[in-house]
Length: 304
Length: 35
Image 1 (tube, each protein chain N blue to C red):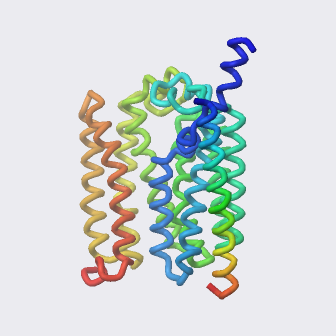
Image 2 (cartoon, rainbow over the protein chains, first blue to last red; image 1 turned 180 degrees about the vertical axis):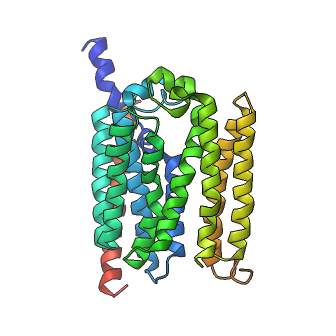
């Protein structure tokens, strides 16, 4: 066996379990699981705790499957970008075909399991989220338009709707509001990252808004989205899904998010964008944590 | 090194498979008892 064949054959065999876990994008998965769990908690219904746990597991596995398929398709641009070049496929630790197979199998298992164990509406929504992320965002929009993450963001907004559907078996205005909340949050969240990673995206030829339209236009768009998000985040309170503690907190958090966008607008360096990216994660986490706390008996129930 | 990685992967796959089967059993029991 020559050196060449040795290095080729060792790509997949040298993979560790942690490499396959990395394919599932665990950090993205954690927020997806959390928002899905929030949908489940907020929805009215009495799903058996085991079936609720299975629903959350299916959302987690479905999100992971999307991540693995995304890493398979984007392996060429991942190899160019410094943020992603250490991922298992560009680093040569996992074969592309292995990652694709892993993702597809997990996607089928998660959707099938959701349908059999919980209900087929939740399974259909989970399948839609996976297909939207893979086909619409990854394969179609990401490399073609600066609006990629605006439309593609819909995939990440599905989890609370899936959670709601798992609990109730149907949809309504409330889960759509939760969907819209994440949908409107995604652009300022992602563009904050794209602002301080724009050189990376430009190198890989990905038409992110800061690359195509420049930082000024991006910062203005970010500010507009945070302004649109402010009243939207109050809707769960107005619709009676959440209480006053949520409502007041959403106002404070929304104002801080707008303030972060204003700071980014005036800051010629990347510093404010980095801080806004970190805050955006905290913002969404706290909003959904408050939604959950509102429904958890003994937590905020007496205050709201 | 490669052998150790492969063994770890095989064990992980076996554990995942067993957990999956156990989950299917648990879900079946819950659904059959009207959960």
